[in-house]
Length: 306
Image (cartoon, rainbow, N blue to C red; front, top):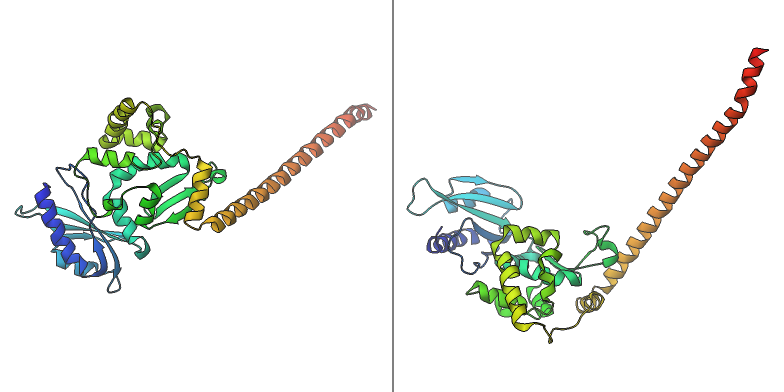
């Protein structure tokens, strides 16, 4: 869809769907986008139960509906194109994550860039907020290593030293988004060196032109101009962890999670040691039995001859 059609259909659909929920919004557009596909609407707290899928379909004049949890899809007539349709995806979000989801989805490309900056410091963002990883657990169980810090967009932007104005506006250009990404306190050019990228970032490099432009063009040019960055905050992963735990009051959870992990690993190690001991004992018993049989075998043959 061209931008004009996309915006008109989006605003119309949002207005029709919003009446069924206490919260409803659509993510902000990505910069310099000239064509659009599906329309995404994020909603929360339906005013009626069960989910009013049939009522929404009638309000949208949808020709076809696919209802599932948490996303329902509606085929809405394309303006002035008979037989053509626009796919409208209605995503039902947990109320406590609504503001974060709007922010996260509005700036998906930005978060792809920021992710490479914050990951070396043990930080990661997903659809439920900003998290910190416990280094001791991460290599063995990435999911268990996550400690949720916050789903408050303002708090996250403040922690990254980024301007809150991004919450209410889109970027005018891709260049301005690149510059904004580089202004975060954790930005280091060496996090974007091609051969050092993690698997997910290498995948983005291959599949997302915007990420490739940032890594291969923008960061390289910025580094060449500056040669070195003298004013960046010198931080270690441990320092960032301590700051995050204090700022978001997560130290008790961190301590409890780490203690539970260590106890679990100790129990597993004990069980493994017991299994190994039993295996060694069985092997020793079998070796003893084999040796005993071998000592009896010659005399048995002699007795048979007599």
